[in-house]
Length: 559
Ligand SMILES: *[C@@H]1O[C@H](CO)[C@@H](O)[C@H](O)[C@H]1NC(C)=O
Ligand SMILES: *[C@@H]1O[C@H](CO)[C@@H](O)[C@H](O)[C@H]1NC(C)=O
Ligand SMILES: *[C@@H]1O[C@H](CO)[C@@H](O)[C@H](O)[C@H]1NC(C)=O
Ligand SMILES: *[C@@H]1O[C@H](CO)[C@@H](O)[C@H](O)[C@H]1NC(C)=O
Ligand SMILES: *[C@@H]1O[C@H](CO)[C@@H](O)[C@H](O)[C@H]1NC(C)=O
Ligand SMILES: *[C@@H]1O[C@H](CO)[C@@H](O)[C@H](O)[C@H]1NC(C)=O
Ligand SMILES: *[C@@H]1O[C@H](CO)[C@@H](O)[C@H](O)[C@H]1NC(C)=O
Ligand SMILES: *[C@@H]1O[C@H](CO)[C@@H](O)[C@H](O)[C@H]1NC(C)=O
Ligand SMILES: *[C@@H]1O[C@H](CO)[C@@H](O)[C@H](O)[C@H]1NC(C)=O
Ligand SMILES: *[C@@H]1O[C@H](CO)[C@@H](O)[C@H](O)[C@H]1NC(C)=O
Image (tube, rainbow, N blue to C red; front, top):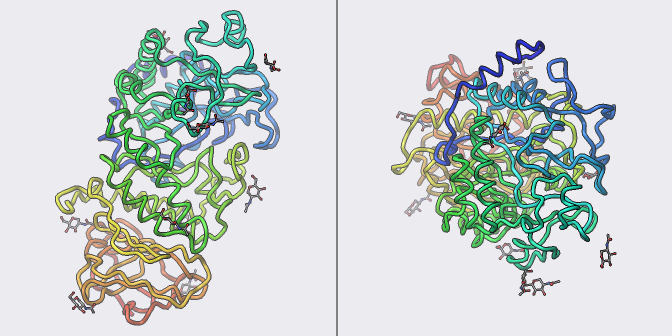
């Protein structure tokens, strides 16, 4: 929606009162995929989305830690880019008012230094603008996930910050010292300390809100109920959820009435599982899976058994289908910063999208950003990329699209629909792994780009012997051996340890993929043709040169 005149604003305001969607539950978020963006960094101001900050820097330098000019309205300018990649939802930075002066870490361009949850951050737009973004998403059949911060409030001093006078002078929402826990520095080896002590540091302490205080509890519940209903928010990402005792959350998320996914920054699968077994929250971000993917695919010949072990533990949790699976976010290194071999990133990407859960892509991952070992360097402006059609953008688009096609096809696998059919590890070696979900078998490796004279065989893949399977990423066809064995060779020069995402030829045809049908254009295998010579025993059809004679016709392969 383009707003330029006051009357347009008025009619937009009227539109905003028409409820467009109902809040979405965890069950309804299953099968979605989410694009995480920082509001300030995703899209620049434009004629339709004027800057809300004066004197913006000419070039957005992440280490300067200041505003670069993105707003709720500028996000709308680039929604096509996100939607074309196949995402169902965006997760935006916290929308509440932040400390608005220079701190020892400069400005709150990221939105996490909330001083008043109940008012909107004018740096990102007006109430009307947030309505407009929400409406525009819903018009496109997309969802709005908002990041929220309730655990802490920034302060500029440890000493005296908890006097009524200091709190009033700081213009924070919680002005009574009783609404905070007293100062102590967090000890990250002690959960009680993590919950009651202050995050941040001596330069920028984050005062820990007393979320046992009944007035605080009621006020936060009323606020979140109002926020989600006022702006038709479909889901919440909850910052520092781990730092508030779990018992706080059911009342809070119940009041919100929408799906909650919490930031529980831990590799501890037992503690992570408690969030669901104790029913504290619908879902948490998949840090255990992330750490295991780093172990497995973060370095060439890394620890694949870690992925198998942690992955299985994650699959044993009550509802792995709602965990948020990510490779990057605003707190972590860009994947390509820590792992320069692009084949490893490609393998990890397939794992991210095929493993049970909700894939979440942090803006810039699709642009193959490799600068950014951590905060603030991993928060670059996206616009210098020109929103290019990169290889990774296309892979993500393919993965989102094929998941959607399979969901739409609505087949049951062992009595479950695709989303609820549990991922299974079906084979592994020290460096290779095969996982199945629904009609897919992903064959992954951490061997990296250099070719190796090895073959990874996956017996009992579930595919019929002597049938054909197709790698849906490249649309190349392979034949299945006795006992349903598929085997891939990593000997091809220039490809080495590339990932495969197999589906039976019949299933590929049923969803009109790879030109086997009319819906999707056949992808020319040219680029990977003769260079990829598989183990001859696999009986690769036509050595990768699959030529489809007539779209929509099965069996019209010429070797
Ligand atoms: C805070 O108080 C402590 C002890 O009272 C003192 O050592 C410290 O320097 C003070 N810090 C600041 C930032 O004023
Ligand atoms: C942090 O907590 C752990 C476990 O409770 C404890 O053993 C350790 O001494 C604490 N460290 C500090 C610096 O207090
Ligand atoms: C853990 O932290 C809490 C809160 O600071 C403290 O009361 C408790 O003594 C700590 N436990 C240990 C074992 O250090
Ligand atoms: C609900 O939020 C709106 C928009 O921020 C605000 O104007 C209104 O006062 C809030 N209502 C309550 C009951 O808090
Ligand atoms: C790999 O991960 C497994 C499972 O977590 C662990 O037991 C093993 O020690 C790790 N191996 C190496 C070489 O780090
Ligand atoms: C990783 O990011 C840092 C900045 O945080 C940069 O200096 C470094 O060159 C990057 N490394 C790679 C491999 O891109
Ligand atoms: C993006 O690149 C892919 C692969 O090269 C191509 O198939 C597609 O048409 C391109 N899309 C646009 C919008 O240019
Ligand atoms: C197929 O499975 C059977 C029974 O497990 C086994 O005896 C046979 O050797 C297998 N054949 C191949 C080619 O792996
Ligand atoms: C799609 O549905 C058809 C008909 O039920 C089924 O035969 C086919 O296996 C399904 N395809 C996939 C990819 O699940
Ligand atoms: C694809 O292959 C055809 C036939 O060999 C060739 O004419 C064409 O140039 C190739 N295209 C690319 C992009 O390599």
